[in-house]
Length: 355
Length: 109
Image (cartoon, rainbow over the protein chains, first blue to last red):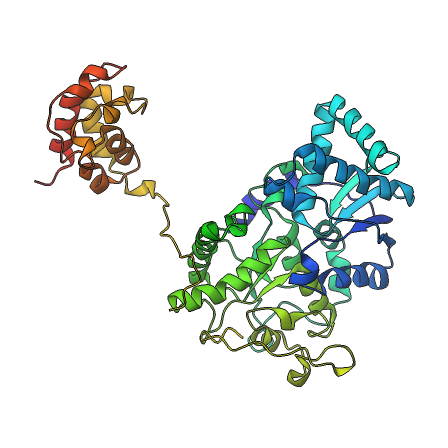
């Protein structure tokens, strides 16, 4: 990586983020894909950083999946979004932070569309009142949850119990950062570092001691693409995208992958199993895959959370090799135990030994 | 190997470093009209051979621009030199002559 060149790009795309008082909204799918990530985010921001992050049980989907799958028209998605913003206003907040990249992209797209077409904003205002009797409001500031962790990355580093460093060799871990397409590809100025080389995850990796890998298909989509995956006949296209990325990153021997999108970690994780079953190929060492994490999980590991409390047992690719590298202690017998020792069941062992 | 009901497709990435600039420049020197092609496809639509074989001058030109010489030659090897494409080309490119020049420069035979 030509570091000086990247720094120039990164300095061109910076944004000021409010310090405190956010209305937090969860993702539809992250809670089932990576069940502890959002709870970890709230625990870090509230209890470690002592910030005010409020969430409401009345929040619903942003409509992003239905919108990008052509199941609902744009105005319907906009009215759903107007309702979320109205809830934020109702609870007395001005800063809006969302957990999902697709939501972030859709919120940004909606705000920009309203700015460009005020008559459309007026129509949505009417629809919101007709359907929900809520007062229309727009956030003063819109952030993605990874922006918040990026902002406080150095404070997290100060409280860190573990670093992204191989404990045996003392070398920094080689980390692939994968940014969700909807973070900055549509509106480069809305993301840290712009669209080509977003800095949001690279900044966290550097602050926590790791080394960012620059590889040819770094900015390539993970392959989720909504209709590509949702329609079974198109699913091979989704898989091929992921395959292309892994083929490209393989020579650089990454230790782990960090992502900031709901779909990306899911597909980069699960498709490794499918590729191994189809092609008999794995991309990590000793027949294992490359472990994939959300940024909240990595922040949690760095801060010393128990790996099984972070939900790492629901990953397809086993995380133990990475935990060993970082020197993080874990109890293998508790991997598949839930609250009060409840048995969560064990997955069948696939032929690729990904688990 | 497991069957999931879908499969991997080969990457369609084009490596422009494979493009032979020297040969392309020779073609342009001999046939400046090649730069006039706007890939409308009239030649392919009117092609007699194209109904029965993989023949398309439009595709061949695009493949050459992408550095895929082998594929380009596959798209012209069955040409009958009937000249119908020359008659329909809206840019009045001498397609038959262009085709022969491509064969001459890019073919190993």
